[in-house]
Amino acid sequence: MGDTVRIAVSNQKGGVGKTAVAINVAGALNDRGHDVLFVDLDPQGNATENLGMRDVYDEGPPSLFDVLSDAEKRHHVVDLVREHEEMDVIPSNIDMTAIEPELTLSRRSGQQLSLTLEHVDHEYDYVIIDCPPFLGNLMDNALYAAQNMLIPALAETTSKRAFELLFDHVSALEKDYDIRIRERGVVINRIDVRKNQAREMVAWIEDAFDDTPVWKVRERAAVQRAMTNGTSLFAEAPECDQLPSFREIARGLDEQFRRRRVSHD
Ligand SMILES: Nc1ncnc2c1ncn2[C@@H]1O[C@H](COP(=O)(O)OP(=O)(O)OP(=O)(O)O)[C@@H](O)[C@H]1O
Ligand SMILES: [Mg+2]
Image (cartoon, rainbow, N blue to C red; front, side, top):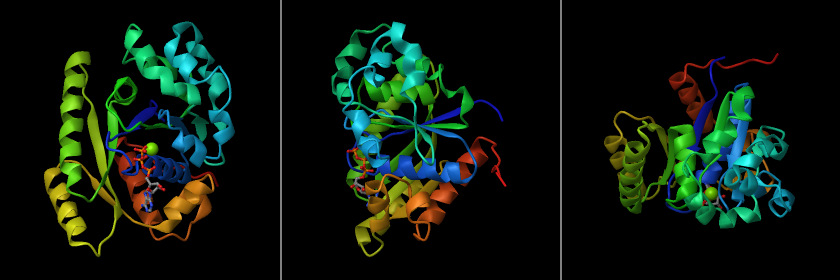
C-alpha cells in the first residue's frame, strides 16, 4: 500500500451534510477493508458526538486544540486517537472554539494540521477530515493537509454561490502555498427527487463539474438515525438503500488513488 491519502470534506456552507458524508464515506472505506482515521476539525464537534464520543468533547487538555496551537505538544496527537468500531478518531473538543485566533498568531498558520498528522497518520490508508462550516484557518489547515477535497452540497440554487466562494478560496490558498488542491468529487446530498428544483440543480452540478465525479445521496431518515446511534450506515443500517451510493464513492476514491479493496477473510 502506498502513502496515506488525506481527504478534506469541505464546504463552508452550513448543514449541507459534510459530517454525514464524512462519517459514511469513512464507514464505506472501512467496509472495503481500509484502515481509516477520522479527524473532527469542527469546533462544533458534531462528528465527535455522532461517533459516540461526546464525553471526549468535554474533556480537559490535552486536546486537538493543544496539539494544533503548540508545536512542542504536537507529537502528543498519538494520545488523542480513540477507537471506534469502524475507524480510529481524533475527536474535536470544546477548546477548539478558541483555535482560530491561536492559528492566526502561529507561524505557518495553515500547516499545523499537516505537521500534526505526520506524527500519526502513516499507519492508515485514508484520513478523512470533517471541516467546519466557515472559511478560516481550520479550513485552510484541512485543505493544506489533504490537498484533496470531497465536496458535499445540497441540490439547491444557493449551492452555486457556495461553490463560487469555495473555489475562490481554494485558488487563493493554492497561490499562497504553491500547492494544487484536487476536487475528488462532489456529493449531492439529501436529494428529494420529487422536487423540480432538486432535479434541475442535480443537472446543473453534473454539467458544471464535467471532469469531477458527481455522486448522489438521497434524503433518508436512516442517515440521521445511524449518526444518532454513533455509527455510519454500514454498522447501523446495512439495509438502507443509500448504502450503494457510499460504496460507489469509496470505490471511486480507491480508483482515483489506485487502491484495491482489501479482503480480511
Ligand atoms: N442524506 C441525508 N438524509 C437525511 N438527513 C441527512 C442526510 N445528510 C445529512 N442529514 C442530516 O442533515 C443535518 C445536517 O447534516 P450534517 O450535520 O452532516 O451537515 P454539515 O454540513 O456537517 O453541517 P455543519 O455545517 O453544521 O457542520 C443533520 O441533522 C444530518 O443528520
Ligand atoms: Mg458538520
